Image (spheres, helix red, strand yellow):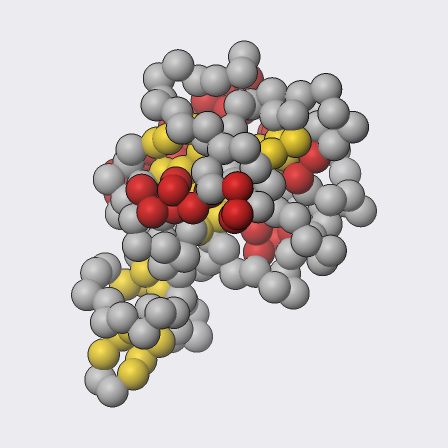
Length: 194
C-alpha cells in the first residue's frame, strides 16, 4: 500500500523514491514535533523543495492527518550526520510522523514564550525539572495513537524487540539526542504500543 486512503494528501518532493538505493525496508517509525504554529504551515514548508525535509504524515492539533510522502517512499525527516538507529541513518529505513507542537517554552518577563519569542497562551506540560512545554491536545494524541496502530498493522515488524537499544517506534530525540528534543516529555508515550 502506497497511501492510506482515509487521509488527504499533499505530496512532497523531499524523499527517496521507491526502488532507489536509499529506500530500504521499513524498520523504524520516528515521531517528531513540528516546532511550528499550524499544521498547514508545516505542510507548506515540508512540501517545498527548498526545505529539503519532509515526513510521511503531519498530525494537527485538532487531530486532522495529512499525508505528504507515500509509504513506499522514504521521507527526509530524521537525517543529519548525527542521526543513527542501530548504526544506520534513519531516513532510508523509516516512516516519519510530524506532530504540530511548538515544543519547549521559556519564561520571559512573566510570560511563557515559544522559540520565536511569541507569547504562548495554550495548554502547558511541565517536565520533571519544571521546564514548560506545549501540551499535546487529546484529539491530536488520539489521532497519533490511531495512525501508529494503522502503520503497525501494515508493518508489524515495528513492534519487534529483536535487538539492542531503542525500540522501533521512537522519537527524533532518540535517534539524534545530541541535537533534537522532539517529540519531548509532553508526549504521552504510554498511549503508544511499542
